[in-house]
Length: 448
Ligand code: PEP
Ligand code: CO
Image (cartoon, rainbow, N blue to C red):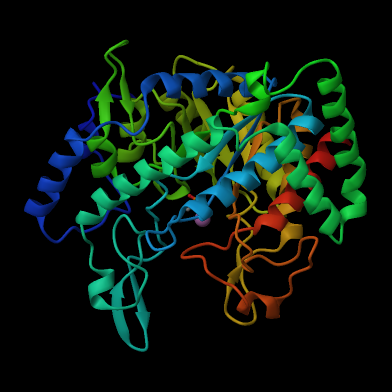
C-alpha cells in the first residue's frame, strides 16, 4: 500500500465500514461544526507522555493494563461508577506492578467508549426489524423505532460525558484517592473475603512487607509523589470518524495533528483494512494507536499495519491487541510476533482475552468463562516465551460493579447466576472481583 497526503478529512475518500446512516445531513453538519469549536478533551503533551510510557512497554520495561466497559452508557453515569471502575484498575495495577517488577501503564476504556461495530446493521425481534444498537454515541439500546434512530445530537452528549468523566478521573488520580497504601488495603479486603484468598495471600503479604520497608526507609506519599498519585490515560475505539475528525486539532507546540478525544485510540477488528478509512484517519494523528488483530490476521496484514501506522518505527506508537480465542492463540499469534520482530517493528503486544471467547449460554445470555479468559492469557505468555518477545499487557472488559455477566472466577459464577445482575449493553464484562482474580492469575503467570 502507498498512501497519499494526509489531512484530518482524507479518510472521506476511502472505503468505510460501520458508520451510522445519519438521517439528517444538515443536523449532522451543525453538530460537527459545534464539536470542532469545543475545547480538546486531552492535550497533545499528555498523549506524548503516554506514548513514552508505551515505548517502555515495547522495550520490555513496563506492562500495559487497558480496561473498562465494552460500551459506556449515558444512563449508567455517576461518580460512584467511575470511582469504582478506577478503583479496580488501580488495585489490579498494584498486583501487576509488584509481580512483574516493572511499572504498569494504566489506560481506561473510558471517557469516550460509546460506539460499537455490530455484525448486522439491523436486528429483528418478533418480526419487527430495526436498526442495531450502535452505542450511545449513535442511538439507544431500547428496542423501539425512536430509540434506535441514529441521532447526531448524541455525539455532543458523548463529548460532554467524556469531559466530566475525565474531570473526575483527573481529580481522583491526582487528589489522593490513588494512594498506594490505600489501594493495597482494598486488595487485602478482597483477599480476606475471596474463596480463593489463600492462594493470593502470600502475594498480598509480600506487597505488605514491601510497603512497610518503603515507609521505614522514609519513602511515603508526603515526599514521593508516585506513592500518592498516578498517571491514568483514556482510550476508545475510534469508530465514528465524523466525531474523531471534529476533535482533531493541530498542536501549537509541534505542528502535529492529535485526535484530542482521548489519549489513545484503537482500530477495531472489523475496520482494520489497510486501504480503509480508519487506517487512513489514524495514520495521520500522532496519538499512540492500537489495532485489534483477530484469528484471520495474516503476517502480511500485520506488517502492513505496522508500515501504515508506524513507518518510523517509534516504540510506543503502535499497540497490537490480539484477540484470537483461547484454543488457537498460541498457534495464531506466534507467526505474527516473529514477523514483526524480524522486520524490526517495535510493537506493544497486548492480549484481549475477551472477544475470542464469547458464547451464548443455555439461557440465551452472551457470556464468557473466566477459565477461557485466563487460558488465552496463558497462551499469550507462552507464544511470547517461544518467540523471545515481551508479553506487553492485557486489554479487558470489566466494571467495578457487582454484575453477573461472565462465568467462573473465585466466586464460581454459574449459568443461573447470569440472571441476577446482567446489565451490559453490549459484551459481558468481568465484575470487580473477577477482575482482581484475573490480576492475581496474571501475577502467578508472571512469576512462573
Ligand atoms: C471491543 O473491543 O469491544 C470490540 C468490538 O472488539 P473487536 O474489534 O476486537 O471485535
Ligand atoms: Co466488546
